[in-house]
Image 1 (cartoon, rainbow over the protein chains, first blue to last red):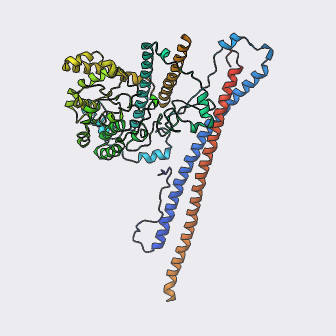
Image 2: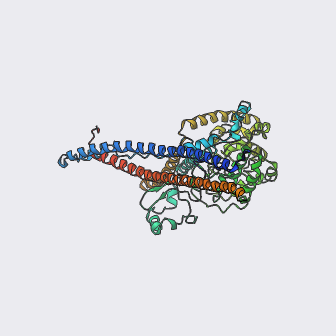
Image 3: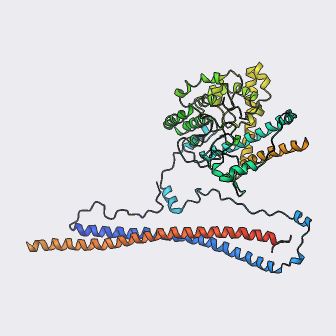
Length: 498
Length: 75
């Protein structure tokens, strides 16, 4: 529905109740003429606004043009002074000079409040402000702003940011794991002599056009290659293929934001359900119902997941919920769905079915033992505010891999995972791993305290780091690109070392 | 009878004249509004093209400057 930018004010000229006068026709005529004059007034106001906008834009361009003209003049002078014989053509000269870097400034924050045109801003200001829920913030336990549960403009960006950061961490974990494996098995390369890696196959695949490339796992032409290298060598980074790759941050505002983007992925239900209930709790009971129903349906047959689809393609929620024990968790599904809002325990139940077919996934070994301890650590606090705490924002909890037969504690732990990141969990719970098996209570205490400290550190780190789309995306791309490069370079090193 | 109808007829005739006058004015207002909209759109698009050209030009100038300088700073 298009928004009207400029509305000329008295819309109807003579739709008014008439005062009781003898000559009604004249009265109507006079009223109409007066409204016409008011219309002309608002018209002139908008005309002035339009022309003023164009004027300011033209002015900025004029200044840019003048500065560019100066530079061109200087260059012209300089070039005429160039003498080909005097040119320094030594090899050292080539290497010592600083390489040329063009300024790659990306436009950001295009649709911000500041760039809203003035008439639309005026219309916006005539709307009611949201209720002053922030007065309730001091009474909250978890320190979040109360208004954010009613309306949060930065919700989608935060969601996307979490996902991106999560993906970068997963990629780094995978890299470390690969390196570890290589170190552990130094003779692995000898047993299976590796095929020589050539780019010929790739180029041949791309011969017919990028659209017909079939990825290894037969994802289809719309599969997700980590870096889309086009034929002219440029790298296409943000290719929104079914929203599967880096979804652009302002996801279309649907009631279930993550679910469309994860629709094709192997793990749609768990992240969607996890975040949707979280969102539902924040948005109010009215929305939780439809959201839940919309999300539950795709949950039953999680599509045969694209095995080995590059780790980067997985949503941010995928990595941490590494295969939780299906049997213990299966008992959980029935109660939580009718249970209502406070228990995002629903995410783990659907996740087990989807996880078994995920062997490729680099569910890193460090997480398995630590999350086992994590779950024991969480039960007591969750029990205190399982209903009131509200579902946590996006960061998914680490799954209990292996046997930890704590399904109940598992669900509770999911319900209380305040801004925890997954990277902290492995680190924080490594010390109490051995304790968990022996003394549950002390492990809980230790783990919980440890995690709090690390949590603060993580948060501080996050606040310091750049908070805009470009930096986050560039970091993610860098990690992923360097990941593939590192792998290949490591392979090459093996080659030469043998 | 004719005497009674005359003022009424005159009045309604006058009313119609007035309405036609108002109609002319309002249709011109609409034309002005249309003109402003199309002017706005066309100016925006031209300025956007200009913006692109300026950006491309700026990048080329930067490249040429980098090629031409032999380590001295451009004054």
